Length: 353
Image: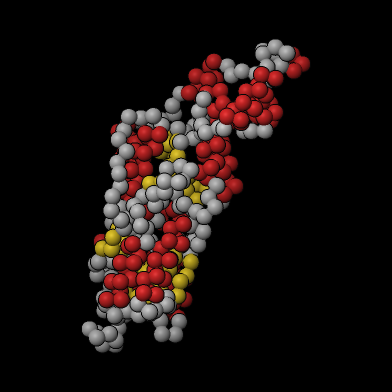
């Protein structure tokens, strides 16, 4: 069988090689370009299948695949309306673009609704050679994305607490629960004992870590959470959770929210119910976004340095893509920023009912 004609006088295709070897077309490309993280056994199986079929990559196609696109992907699993109303991602993108733009790179933003769509998108981006790498957000338990991107040979970084054992590098501040611990201790010091937490989706790793920190801090004071309610980060979710808490008997005197956007919704919901923040209820956010300092009262929140983390992720990914950039070390941990949305508990020693 000749290398140029394959079966029945027809040139074999990369898809046929992939099928024969039981791998993806991206894996075939990696085997011939000496990229990715293929095992030697898998690489040998691919090469043997190609030899058997008489296939080899064409020079023009190889040159096209090896060319840099100077584009990086940011795939976000959020509904469009949630992303549009959450300035967290504006801050994150600002940090990323601040590193990419001066180097001639662009950011390709995709919104997806679930794992199947997300995985298919990464497969397509890798197969078509549309991006040089990807920034992953929202680390999850049993997260398939790092392994998938490693198999595709697509450089990636994952936003989250550093983990030296992770499949792809993780970029973020250490001790993600520290800011929540500070927030609870701050509220306890103000006399609050009925403290609720409005969390994000339970499958996210940072949701689990921060919830554990919230419960541990209360447990250390001999208390239990007034309630922990999970939401999808949407305005509707934040308003609904706040309304449910305000309707409860002996409502909470303080609520900690998983991000600043939900905290803003919580303040508005409390005010519409005739309450005053912080006289009747204290509110704490998480992110330290600019909008928190524009409110009245200004928002007490946890600073997780969103822009700085985005910039560090971009620099690390650029280095993985072969750019000569220094990978900055992120130091510090999330810290509480006390402003005007927290005050003494109603009925406490410093404030009468």
